[in-house]
Length: 91
Image 1 (cartoon, rainbow, N blue to C red):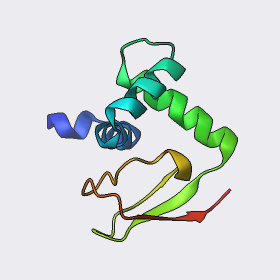
Image 2 (cartoon, one colour):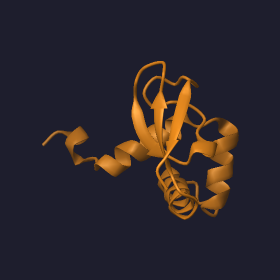
Image 3 (cartoon, rainbow, N blue to C red):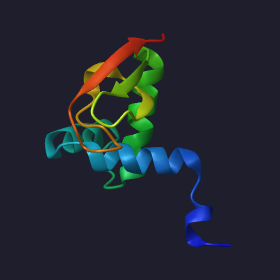
Image 4 (cartoon, helix red, strand yellow):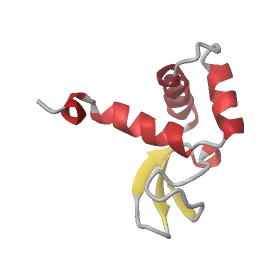
């Protein structure tokens, strides 16, 4: 089994989310997670927030990448790093 196959889909999404954040957004979500120093905890804090606030289906008009997230918290597209994001509310 390859190493990449050992990563769960939610973990991949979390990694893309973390990598797309600005430094300020990383600090914010790390604080929300109790400053554990673990990106996975920040991802968990974000998912909890999204579940409480509602999520939007997000679409990057630059590369066509689609994902779900809290519309007001998105910094960059996980697909291309662009900021050309459109949201459709789902909750």
